[in-house]
Image (cartoon, rainbow, N blue to C red; front, side, top):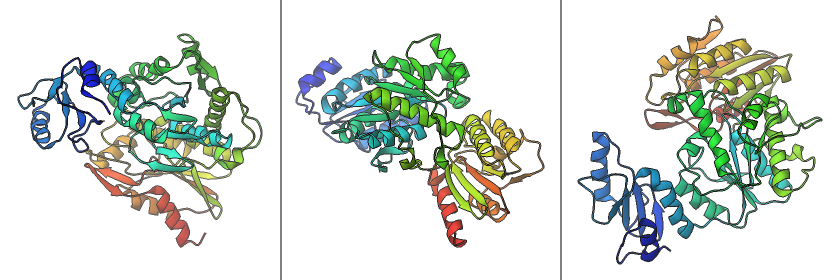
Length: 453
Protein backbone atom coordinates (compact mmCIF):
# COMPACT_ATOMS: atom_id res chain seq x y z
CA UNK A 1 0.00 0.00 0.00
CA UNK A 2 1.18 3.50 -0.86
CA UNK A 3 0.52 6.09 1.85
CA UNK A 4 0.11 9.83 1.38
CA UNK A 5 3.63 10.59 2.61
CA UNK A 6 5.20 8.27 0.03
CA UNK A 7 2.95 9.57 -2.73
CA UNK A 8 3.67 13.13 -1.73
CA UNK A 9 7.40 12.52 -1.99
CA UNK A 10 7.04 10.94 -5.43
CA UNK A 11 4.77 13.61 -6.85
CA UNK A 12 6.41 16.45 -4.90
CA UNK A 13 3.04 17.62 -3.65
CA UNK A 14 0.87 17.28 -0.56
CA UNK A 15 -2.21 15.10 -0.88
CA UNK A 16 -4.14 15.02 2.40
CA UNK A 17 -6.26 12.10 3.63
CA UNK A 18 -5.31 9.80 0.79
CA UNK A 19 -4.29 6.14 0.79
CA UNK A 20 -3.36 4.59 -2.54
CA UNK A 21 -3.58 0.83 -3.08
CA UNK A 22 -3.21 0.55 -6.86
CA UNK A 23 -2.12 2.23 -10.09
CA UNK A 24 -3.86 2.14 -13.49
CA UNK A 25 -3.66 3.60 -16.99
CA UNK A 26 -7.27 2.85 -18.04
CA UNK A 27 -10.42 4.40 -16.59
CA UNK A 28 -12.23 1.05 -16.83
CA UNK A 29 -10.01 -0.59 -14.20
CA UNK A 30 -9.35 2.33 -11.87
CA UNK A 31 -11.14 2.74 -8.52
CA UNK A 32 -11.31 5.25 -5.67
CA UNK A 33 -8.11 3.88 -4.06
CA UNK A 34 -6.00 4.14 -7.24
CA UNK A 35 -3.73 6.55 -9.02
CA UNK A 36 -4.96 6.91 -12.59
CA UNK A 37 -2.64 8.06 -15.40
CA UNK A 38 -4.61 9.55 -18.29
CA UNK A 39 -3.04 10.92 -21.48
CA UNK A 40 -5.12 13.71 -23.03
CA UNK A 41 -4.83 13.84 -26.81
CA UNK A 42 -4.53 17.07 -28.79
CA UNK A 43 -7.49 16.63 -31.15
CA UNK A 44 -11.03 17.75 -30.36
CA UNK A 45 -12.40 14.21 -30.08
CA UNK A 46 -9.76 13.24 -27.50
CA UNK A 47 -10.46 16.39 -25.51
CA UNK A 48 -14.18 15.57 -25.43
CA UNK A 49 -13.52 11.93 -24.54
CA UNK A 50 -11.49 13.04 -21.54
CA UNK A 51 -14.44 15.04 -20.21
CA UNK A 52 -16.84 12.14 -20.70
CA UNK A 53 -14.59 9.41 -19.31
CA UNK A 54 -13.16 11.25 -16.35
CA UNK A 55 -16.67 12.25 -15.24
CA UNK A 56 -17.57 8.55 -14.94
CA UNK A 57 -14.21 7.23 -13.72
CA UNK A 58 -13.20 6.47 -10.15
CA UNK A 59 -9.74 7.29 -8.80
CA UNK A 60 -8.02 8.54 -5.69
CA UNK A 61 -5.69 10.78 -7.63
CA UNK A 62 -5.47 11.63 -11.31
CA UNK A 63 -2.29 12.38 -13.25
CA UNK A 64 -2.66 14.05 -16.65
CA UNK A 65 -0.19 15.36 -19.20
CA UNK A 66 -1.71 18.83 -19.66
CA UNK A 67 -4.30 21.14 -18.17
CA UNK A 68 -7.93 20.84 -19.20
CA UNK A 69 -11.18 22.71 -18.37
CA UNK A 70 -12.58 19.45 -16.93
CA UNK A 71 -9.58 18.84 -14.71
CA UNK A 72 -10.74 17.73 -11.23
CA UNK A 73 -9.31 19.03 -7.97
CA UNK A 74 -7.65 15.74 -7.00
CA UNK A 75 -5.17 15.74 -9.87
CA UNK A 76 -1.64 16.67 -10.89
CA UNK A 77 -0.23 17.80 -14.23
CA UNK A 78 3.04 16.03 -15.03
CA UNK A 79 4.83 16.13 -18.38
CA UNK A 80 4.35 12.85 -20.18
CA UNK A 81 8.11 12.39 -20.62
CA UNK A 82 8.36 12.06 -16.82
CA UNK A 83 5.61 9.46 -16.51
CA UNK A 84 7.79 6.32 -16.81
CA UNK A 85 10.01 7.36 -13.91
CA UNK A 86 7.04 8.45 -11.76
CA UNK A 87 5.22 5.22 -12.53
CA UNK A 88 8.35 3.21 -11.79
CA UNK A 89 8.70 4.81 -8.35
CA UNK A 90 5.08 4.11 -7.50
CA UNK A 91 5.31 0.55 -8.83
CA UNK A 92 8.45 -0.09 -6.75
CA UNK A 93 6.27 0.41 -3.68
CA UNK A 94 3.01 -1.21 -4.81
CA UNK A 95 4.43 -3.97 -7.04
CA UNK A 96 8.07 -4.62 -6.08
CA UNK A 97 10.12 -6.76 -8.42
CA UNK A 98 10.62 -10.37 -7.32
CA UNK A 99 14.15 -11.71 -7.07
CA UNK A 100 14.60 -13.37 -10.46
CA UNK A 101 16.82 -13.20 -13.53
CA UNK A 102 15.52 -10.95 -16.32
CA UNK A 103 16.16 -11.77 -19.98
CA UNK A 104 15.17 -9.50 -22.89
CA UNK A 105 14.80 -10.43 -26.55
CA UNK A 106 14.51 -8.04 -29.48
CA UNK A 107 14.56 -8.48 -33.25
CA UNK A 108 12.25 -7.98 -36.20
CA UNK A 109 11.51 -11.70 -36.27
CA UNK A 110 12.17 -14.57 -33.89
CA UNK A 111 11.31 -12.97 -30.53
CA UNK A 112 8.29 -15.11 -29.72
CA UNK A 113 9.81 -18.42 -30.80
CA UNK A 114 13.06 -17.73 -28.96
CA UNK A 115 11.25 -16.58 -25.82
CA UNK A 116 9.37 -19.86 -25.73
CA UNK A 117 12.56 -21.82 -26.38
CA UNK A 118 14.37 -20.02 -23.55
CA UNK A 119 11.44 -20.77 -21.24
CA UNK A 120 11.32 -24.45 -22.18
CA UNK A 121 15.09 -24.97 -22.08
CA UNK A 122 15.30 -23.27 -18.70
CA UNK A 123 12.63 -25.53 -17.29
CA UNK A 124 14.25 -28.62 -18.86
CA UNK A 125 17.40 -27.57 -16.99
CA UNK A 126 15.54 -27.38 -13.69
CA UNK A 127 14.87 -23.63 -13.59
CA UNK A 128 11.37 -22.23 -13.07
CA UNK A 129 10.45 -19.38 -15.38
CA UNK A 130 7.82 -17.29 -17.11
CA UNK A 131 7.73 -15.56 -20.47
CA UNK A 132 5.96 -12.30 -21.29
CA UNK A 133 5.30 -11.45 -24.91
CA UNK A 134 3.12 -12.00 -27.96
CA UNK A 135 1.71 -15.24 -26.57
CA UNK A 136 0.85 -13.55 -23.27
CA UNK A 137 2.23 -14.59 -19.90
CA UNK A 138 3.31 -18.24 -20.13
CA UNK A 139 4.50 -20.85 -17.68
CA UNK A 140 4.58 -24.65 -17.78
CA UNK A 141 3.81 -24.71 -21.55
CA UNK A 142 0.54 -22.81 -21.15
CA UNK A 143 -0.66 -19.23 -21.39
CA UNK A 144 -1.90 -18.03 -18.01
CA UNK A 145 -2.76 -14.52 -19.21
CA UNK A 146 -3.36 -13.21 -22.74
CA UNK A 147 -3.00 -9.42 -22.98
CA UNK A 148 -2.87 -9.06 -26.79
CA UNK A 149 0.39 -7.13 -27.23
CA UNK A 150 4.05 -7.96 -27.83
CA UNK A 151 5.19 -5.79 -24.91
CA UNK A 152 2.64 -4.57 -22.34
CA UNK A 153 2.64 -1.03 -20.87
CA UNK A 154 4.99 -0.47 -17.94
CA UNK A 155 2.20 -0.53 -15.33
CA UNK A 156 0.85 -3.86 -16.57
CA UNK A 157 4.33 -5.35 -17.03
CA UNK A 158 5.28 -4.68 -13.43
CA UNK A 159 2.01 -6.17 -12.22
CA UNK A 160 2.61 -9.32 -14.27
CA UNK A 161 6.17 -9.63 -12.96
CA UNK A 162 5.00 -9.17 -9.39
CA UNK A 163 2.14 -11.65 -9.70
CA UNK A 164 3.62 -14.40 -11.87
CA UNK A 165 7.33 -13.97 -11.14
CA UNK A 166 7.18 -14.87 -7.47
CA UNK A 167 9.01 -18.10 -6.74
CA UNK A 168 10.49 -18.18 -10.24
CA UNK A 169 14.13 -18.24 -11.27
CA UNK A 170 13.81 -16.15 -14.43
CA UNK A 171 11.56 -14.21 -16.79
CA UNK A 172 12.18 -13.90 -20.52
CA UNK A 173 10.58 -10.82 -22.04
CA UNK A 174 9.95 -9.76 -25.64
CA UNK A 175 11.26 -6.20 -25.99
CA UNK A 176 9.69 -4.65 -29.07
CA UNK A 177 11.02 -1.46 -30.65
CA UNK A 178 7.83 0.29 -29.51
CA UNK A 179 8.38 -0.82 -25.92
CA UNK A 180 11.99 0.32 -25.94
CA UNK A 181 11.39 3.76 -27.38
CA UNK A 182 8.26 4.33 -25.26
CA UNK A 183 10.13 3.46 -22.02
CA UNK A 184 7.81 0.55 -21.17
CA UNK A 185 10.81 -1.18 -19.56
CA UNK A 186 11.73 1.76 -17.32
CA UNK A 187 13.67 0.68 -14.25
CA UNK A 188 14.34 -2.88 -15.41
CA UNK A 189 17.87 -4.23 -15.66
CA UNK A 190 18.46 -7.36 -17.70
CA UNK A 191 20.88 -10.14 -16.85
CA UNK A 192 21.04 -11.35 -20.45
CA UNK A 193 19.64 -10.51 -23.88
CA UNK A 194 19.21 -11.64 -27.44
CA UNK A 195 18.88 -9.83 -30.78
CA UNK A 196 17.48 -12.28 -33.32
CA UNK A 197 17.26 -10.33 -36.58
CA UNK A 198 16.89 -6.92 -38.15
CA UNK A 199 14.92 -6.13 -41.32
CA UNK A 200 12.16 -3.83 -42.54
CA UNK A 201 9.07 -3.49 -40.38
CA UNK A 202 7.15 -0.84 -38.43
CA UNK A 203 8.19 1.99 -40.75
CA UNK A 204 4.70 3.41 -40.30
CA UNK A 205 5.90 4.24 -36.77
CA UNK A 206 9.68 4.67 -36.98
CA UNK A 207 9.71 6.28 -40.46
CA UNK A 208 13.24 5.14 -41.39
CA UNK A 209 15.38 2.05 -40.90
CA UNK A 210 17.89 4.20 -39.00
CA UNK A 211 15.22 5.22 -36.48
CA UNK A 212 14.04 1.62 -36.21
CA UNK A 213 17.58 0.41 -35.54
CA UNK A 214 18.17 3.14 -32.95
CA UNK A 215 14.98 2.10 -31.13
CA UNK A 216 16.09 -1.52 -30.90
CA UNK A 217 19.61 -0.52 -29.86
CA UNK A 218 18.09 1.08 -26.73
CA UNK A 219 18.10 -2.47 -25.35
CA UNK A 220 21.74 -1.96 -24.38
CA UNK A 221 20.72 0.84 -22.00
CA UNK A 222 18.77 -1.72 -19.94
CA UNK A 223 21.59 -4.24 -19.45
CA UNK A 224 23.45 -4.97 -16.25
CA UNK A 225 27.20 -4.36 -16.35
CA UNK A 226 28.13 -8.01 -16.96
CA UNK A 227 25.24 -8.78 -19.34
CA UNK A 228 25.64 -9.92 -22.94
CA UNK A 229 23.31 -9.81 -25.94
CA UNK A 230 23.58 -12.94 -28.08
CA UNK A 231 23.07 -12.92 -31.84
CA UNK A 232 22.75 -15.87 -34.23
CA UNK A 233 25.98 -16.62 -36.04
CA UNK A 234 24.08 -16.03 -39.30
CA UNK A 235 23.55 -12.38 -38.31
CA UNK A 236 27.20 -11.52 -39.01
CA UNK A 237 26.49 -8.14 -40.59
CA UNK A 238 24.36 -7.05 -37.63
CA UNK A 239 26.97 -8.40 -35.19
CA UNK A 240 29.74 -6.41 -36.88
CA UNK A 241 27.64 -3.26 -36.83
CA UNK A 242 26.94 -3.61 -33.12
CA UNK A 243 30.55 -4.40 -32.16
CA UNK A 244 31.49 -0.93 -33.39
CA UNK A 245 29.35 0.70 -30.69
CA UNK A 246 29.26 -1.83 -27.82
CA UNK A 247 31.25 -4.67 -26.29
CA UNK A 248 28.12 -6.30 -24.90
CA UNK A 249 27.42 -8.53 -27.92
CA UNK A 250 28.35 -12.16 -28.52
CA UNK A 251 27.62 -14.77 -31.17
CA UNK A 252 25.78 -17.95 -30.27
CA UNK A 253 27.55 -21.22 -31.05
CA UNK A 254 26.35 -23.45 -33.87
CA UNK A 255 24.49 -26.59 -32.80
CA UNK A 256 25.63 -29.64 -34.75
CA UNK A 257 23.75 -32.86 -35.39
CA UNK A 258 20.22 -33.88 -36.22
CA UNK A 259 17.38 -31.89 -34.68
CA UNK A 260 13.58 -32.35 -34.62
CA UNK A 261 11.52 -31.27 -37.66
CA UNK A 262 10.68 -27.90 -36.09
CA UNK A 263 14.36 -26.95 -36.35
CA UNK A 264 14.71 -28.01 -39.98
CA UNK A 265 14.81 -24.38 -41.10
CA UNK A 266 17.89 -22.23 -40.56
CA UNK A 267 15.99 -19.48 -38.73
CA UNK A 268 14.54 -21.82 -36.12
CA UNK A 269 17.95 -23.44 -35.64
CA UNK A 270 19.35 -19.91 -35.15
CA UNK A 271 16.66 -19.17 -32.57
CA UNK A 272 17.53 -22.37 -30.73
CA UNK A 273 21.23 -21.52 -30.69
CA UNK A 274 20.54 -18.11 -29.13
CA UNK A 275 18.18 -19.67 -26.56
CA UNK A 276 20.83 -22.22 -25.57
CA UNK A 277 23.51 -19.53 -25.26
CA UNK A 278 21.28 -17.37 -23.08
CA UNK A 279 20.37 -20.19 -20.67
CA UNK A 280 23.96 -21.38 -20.39
CA UNK A 281 25.35 -17.90 -19.76
CA UNK A 282 22.56 -16.81 -17.41
CA UNK A 283 22.80 -19.84 -15.13
CA UNK A 284 26.41 -20.91 -15.80
CA UNK A 285 25.42 -24.41 -16.89
CA UNK A 286 25.57 -26.65 -19.96
CA UNK A 287 22.27 -27.42 -21.69
CA UNK A 288 21.96 -31.20 -22.17
CA UNK A 289 20.65 -32.72 -25.46
CA UNK A 290 16.95 -32.25 -24.67
CA UNK A 291 15.85 -30.72 -27.97
CA UNK A 292 13.50 -33.60 -28.81
CA UNK A 293 11.44 -32.63 -25.75
CA UNK A 294 10.75 -29.10 -27.00
CA UNK A 295 7.19 -28.35 -28.08
CA UNK A 296 6.89 -25.76 -30.90
CA UNK A 297 5.37 -22.44 -29.79
CA UNK A 298 1.80 -21.67 -30.84
CA UNK A 299 1.55 -20.71 -34.52
CA UNK A 300 5.28 -20.85 -35.18
CA UNK A 301 6.10 -23.39 -37.89
CA UNK A 302 3.04 -25.44 -36.97
CA UNK A 303 3.37 -28.35 -39.42
CA UNK A 304 0.95 -31.17 -40.26
CA UNK A 305 1.31 -33.95 -42.84
CA UNK A 306 -1.50 -34.61 -45.32
CA UNK A 307 -0.96 -37.59 -47.62
CA UNK A 308 2.24 -36.73 -49.52
CA UNK A 309 1.88 -33.06 -48.56
CA UNK A 310 2.54 -30.79 -45.59
CA UNK A 311 0.46 -27.86 -44.34
CA UNK A 312 2.37 -25.21 -42.38
CA UNK A 313 0.98 -22.31 -40.35
CA UNK A 314 3.39 -19.53 -39.38
CA UNK A 315 3.14 -15.98 -38.03
CA UNK A 316 5.53 -14.66 -40.73
CA UNK A 317 4.17 -11.19 -41.51
CA UNK A 318 7.26 -9.21 -42.57
CA UNK A 319 9.30 -9.45 -45.79
CA UNK A 320 12.27 -10.99 -43.97
CA UNK A 321 10.15 -13.51 -42.08
CA UNK A 322 8.29 -14.59 -45.21
CA UNK A 323 11.54 -14.87 -47.16
CA UNK A 324 13.17 -16.89 -44.38
CA UNK A 325 10.36 -19.38 -43.98
CA UNK A 326 9.87 -19.86 -47.72
CA UNK A 327 13.59 -20.35 -48.26
CA UNK A 328 13.75 -22.66 -45.26
CA UNK A 329 10.87 -24.79 -46.51
CA UNK A 330 12.34 -25.11 -49.99
CA UNK A 331 15.72 -26.13 -48.54
CA UNK A 332 14.21 -28.63 -46.11
CA UNK A 333 11.74 -30.15 -48.59
CA UNK A 334 13.51 -29.96 -51.97
CA UNK A 335 11.17 -32.47 -53.62
CA UNK A 336 7.98 -30.59 -52.76
CA UNK A 337 6.36 -27.65 -54.53
CA UNK A 338 5.54 -24.67 -52.31
CA UNK A 339 2.19 -22.88 -52.31
CA UNK A 340 1.94 -19.64 -50.32
CA UNK A 341 -1.19 -18.05 -48.83
CA UNK A 342 -0.76 -14.68 -47.13
CA UNK A 343 -1.96 -11.10 -46.76
CA UNK A 344 -0.77 -7.87 -45.14
CA UNK A 345 -2.20 -5.99 -42.17
CA UNK A 346 -4.04 -2.73 -42.66
CA UNK A 347 -2.97 0.59 -41.07
CA UNK A 348 0.63 -0.64 -41.05
CA UNK A 349 3.77 -0.20 -43.16
CA UNK A 350 2.44 -0.14 -46.73
CA UNK A 351 5.91 -0.23 -48.29
CA UNK A 352 6.37 -3.87 -47.33
CA UNK A 353 3.30 -5.09 -49.26
CA UNK A 354 4.78 -5.30 -52.79
CA UNK A 355 8.03 -6.63 -51.26
CA UNK A 356 6.15 -9.52 -49.69
CA UNK A 357 4.33 -10.16 -52.96
CA UNK A 358 7.63 -10.42 -54.79
CA UNK A 359 9.07 -12.74 -52.15
CA UNK A 360 6.03 -15.03 -52.26
CA UNK A 361 6.21 -15.48 -56.02
CA UNK A 362 9.98 -15.96 -55.90
CA UNK A 363 9.56 -19.13 -53.84
CA UNK A 364 5.99 -20.25 -54.52
CA UNK A 365 4.53 -22.11 -57.48
CA UNK A 366 1.02 -20.86 -56.61
CA UNK A 367 0.15 -17.78 -54.57
CA UNK A 368 -3.12 -17.03 -52.76
CA UNK A 369 -3.29 -13.35 -51.79
CA UNK A 370 -5.95 -12.71 -49.18
CA UNK A 371 -6.77 -10.75 -46.01
CA UNK A 372 -4.76 -10.64 -42.81
CA UNK A 373 -6.04 -7.97 -40.38
CA UNK A 374 -7.32 -5.22 -42.71
CA UNK A 375 -8.31 -3.03 -39.74
CA UNK A 376 -9.74 0.24 -41.17
CA UNK A 377 -8.42 -0.24 -44.71
CA UNK A 378 -10.18 -1.71 -47.74
CA UNK A 379 -8.89 -5.33 -47.96
CA UNK A 380 -9.19 -5.25 -51.76
CA UNK A 381 -6.81 -2.28 -51.90
CA UNK A 382 -4.33 -4.04 -49.62
CA UNK A 383 -4.37 -7.01 -51.96
CA UNK A 384 -3.77 -4.74 -54.96
CA UNK A 385 -0.81 -3.16 -53.12
CA UNK A 386 0.67 -6.64 -52.64
CA UNK A 387 0.05 -7.75 -56.23
CA UNK A 388 1.74 -4.57 -57.53
CA UNK A 389 5.06 -6.21 -56.69
CA UNK A 390 4.26 -9.43 -58.55
CA UNK A 391 4.34 -10.52 -62.18
CA UNK A 392 3.38 -14.20 -62.02
CA UNK A 393 0.20 -15.53 -63.62
CA UNK A 394 -0.15 -18.09 -60.81
CA UNK A 395 -1.88 -15.70 -58.42
CA UNK A 396 -5.36 -15.95 -56.95
CA UNK A 397 -6.87 -12.92 -55.21
CA UNK A 398 -9.47 -14.01 -52.64
CA UNK A 399 -10.51 -11.37 -50.10
CA UNK A 400 -12.17 -13.67 -47.55
CA UNK A 401 -9.40 -15.61 -45.81
CA UNK A 402 -11.53 -18.66 -44.87
CA UNK A 403 -12.55 -18.99 -48.53
CA UNK A 404 -8.94 -18.59 -49.67
CA UNK A 405 -7.77 -21.28 -47.24
CA UNK A 406 -10.54 -23.64 -48.31
CA UNK A 407 -9.64 -23.06 -51.95
CA UNK A 408 -5.97 -23.78 -51.27
CA UNK A 409 -6.84 -26.98 -49.41
CA UNK A 410 -8.96 -28.16 -52.33
CA UNK A 411 -6.17 -27.57 -54.85
CA UNK A 412 -3.50 -29.62 -53.06
CA UNK A 413 -2.34 -32.48 -55.28
CA UNK A 414 0.82 -34.48 -54.49
CA UNK A 415 4.19 -33.59 -52.96
CA UNK A 416 3.17 -30.02 -52.17
CA UNK A 417 3.55 -27.78 -49.16
CA UNK A 418 0.91 -25.18 -48.36
CA UNK A 419 2.15 -22.30 -46.21
CA UNK A 420 -0.50 -20.23 -44.44
CA UNK A 421 1.46 -17.16 -43.39
CA UNK A 422 0.73 -14.09 -41.27
CA UNK A 423 -1.80 -15.19 -38.65
CA UNK A 424 0.03 -17.87 -36.68
CA UNK A 425 -1.46 -18.16 -33.21
CA UNK A 426 -4.04 -15.40 -33.72
CA UNK A 427 -7.67 -16.41 -33.30
CA UNK A 428 -9.32 -13.52 -35.11
CA UNK A 429 -9.38 -11.24 -38.14
CA UNK A 430 -9.52 -7.55 -37.16
CA UNK A 431 -11.90 -5.49 -39.32
CA UNK A 432 -12.86 -1.91 -38.41
CA UNK A 433 -12.16 -2.43 -34.72
CA UNK A 434 -14.08 -5.73 -34.50
CA UNK A 435 -12.32 -9.06 -33.95
CA UNK A 436 -14.04 -11.73 -36.04
CA UNK A 437 -13.25 -15.25 -34.75
CA UNK A 438 -10.92 -17.09 -37.13
CA UNK A 439 -7.85 -19.33 -36.80
CA UNK A 440 -5.57 -20.76 -39.50
CA UNK A 441 -4.67 -23.60 -37.13
CA UNK A 442 -8.31 -24.46 -36.49
CA UNK A 443 -9.00 -24.44 -40.22
CA UNK A 444 -6.15 -26.90 -40.76
CA UNK A 445 -7.35 -29.16 -37.96
CA UNK A 446 -10.93 -29.14 -39.26
CA UNK A 447 -9.72 -29.94 -42.79
CA UNK A 448 -7.60 -32.86 -41.58
CA UNK A 449 -10.47 -34.16 -39.43
CA UNK A 450 -12.77 -34.17 -42.46
CA UNK A 451 -10.17 -36.12 -44.40
CA UNK A 452 -9.78 -38.56 -41.49
CA UNK A 453 -6.04 -37.98 -41.36
